[in-house]
Length: 345
Image 1 (cartoon, rainbow, N blue to C red):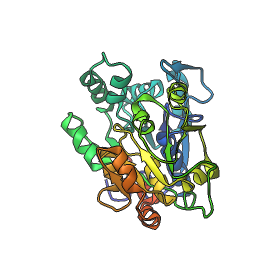
Image 2: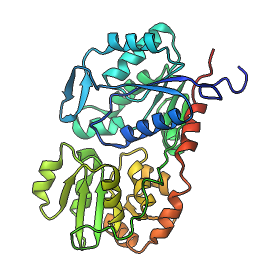
Image 3: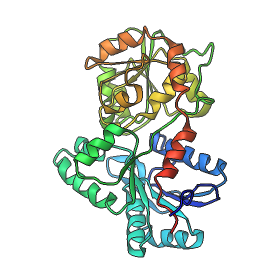
Image 4: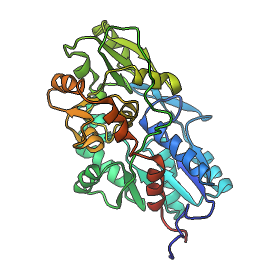
């Protein structure tokens, strides 16, 4: 195939993105897929999503915010037939993802997938009796037929290859630095310093490691999830503000002194880049997600002792954080995505 024959190279193409994660969920996966679609559309392409929206769904056990489409294969087949996509990307391993995979395999349609969350660790955190090895076996089966399985970082790529995955390609993450920016004068009505967490309030996010710290000022949690009620009761001094979006979210970032990211299972941590773009230094554990985003840049403190990381982050230059974030563009990430797609036959 000659150069330029890849979907998205010079001519308008049709993209179908299949995802079980969608609004009203507010998380990095949803934001990444929304931005990908917007960017592809800005490049002149036709993008459609197959999501749980408008379908009969049931809540995921133990995680009611996630709703899974029930028997979606027939309607998904009609969507593929009527739209005629040049490329199909399956972003999640839920019922829609499974149906899209089955249709593509049956019809011999090339497709790509992506690995957004540490699914084996998440499952083990919620259902300890299920071994991680069993979940990895399922994931190898799910992603095996894909022409490319996209991941956010090289370290995750190497880790998954060690688990027996193949055709693993990099599709990094960026940040909208026009939207996420410092807001002069932004304040929250709480004693400072303000320690902020943004994301799902769920057991696998390890939020309790943050909330249990002895820190001056105020801990603020932005987001929702199944662990919220329990954590609110256990840590009444923390401020649980629920989900925030748009300019409201930006102002909460900008009004904070340190962004605390306690997760040890995230594959990237898009919220880390959003905080940095707003000029907020990061405190986190020295694990894959934060380590891949920040590296050795002087914009965060990565320590096994999270309290020490918080104290160090408080001394970091906010301008350095903003400058670092300006080097992370979404368009470059979209070009990576396009390069990972199979060429047109």
